[in-house]
Image (cartoon, rainbow, N blue to C red; front, side):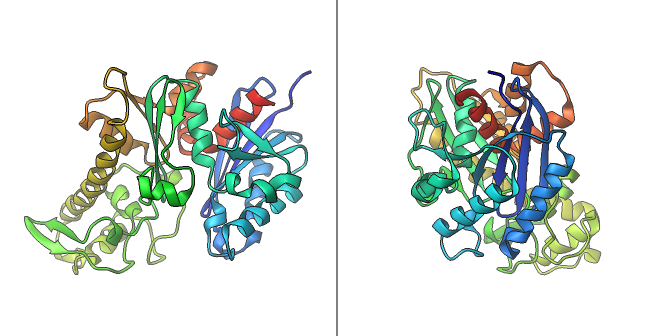
Length: 356
């Protein structure tokens, strides 16, 4: 029996990501739209409408994963999972499948809306495991590093199998498989308490003056299309405005120094984040048998950092978009970029296609 197109949905707290696969499992479209879920479920409803208005299909099976249950709109995570699932079920037409992550032995389990409340602990924040499930089918040994706007996921894959020390957010934060640092939304005060500025070590203000998006605008690493979140002060995303916010972190104004000085400060903040993530990558890489060949697989809006880490520790680097594209023989650079940024949305659609 011919399969229907599949849309994979990744419902985050700040963004909604979606990937459309055709009836043969080929990737056709990927979208990321803003979804400030903490403001209310109407944000999610509007984001769904925006995605559906741009996707070129009227009927589809829907595979759904999420992290948005963590936002403070919900009294607890169980309520969040149920409320998000209810909205997705109501808004979408066709079969709806909710990803249950580790509930299934091959990390490819799904349930219907009627089972969501029973399996909510396996549904909550399981999007990283969908990504790992996809990568594990493509690469024998790897460390998947998915660096997003807010968090970074580290998943070791051995013999085509994710090998996880923790499965919940709480345990994964203890094992550093989940690190709360990303390339857009992370406040700079969370990166370090001290920074070197013009050869002098200075304290960093414990204030929400600037985020990592300011850093990566100035270092020219951040792609403008990924830069969807409001700035810390609600002002422009220009180089000058970004520099002003970063300067404020160490008690300065931008007019005191040329722009190159603030770019150098941005590079210093970048190195703080790289050092932190590289330390975690080495820690997890050491868990693999020394005789096995380890690849770093990078994903997310911050995949450029995963690539840099791989170069620093002298391991082969694979971009997850190339894993997707090589299996489908396409070379659309824009589609490859969005597949990298929105890996969980593609992965959950891929798993649903191959397991249903």
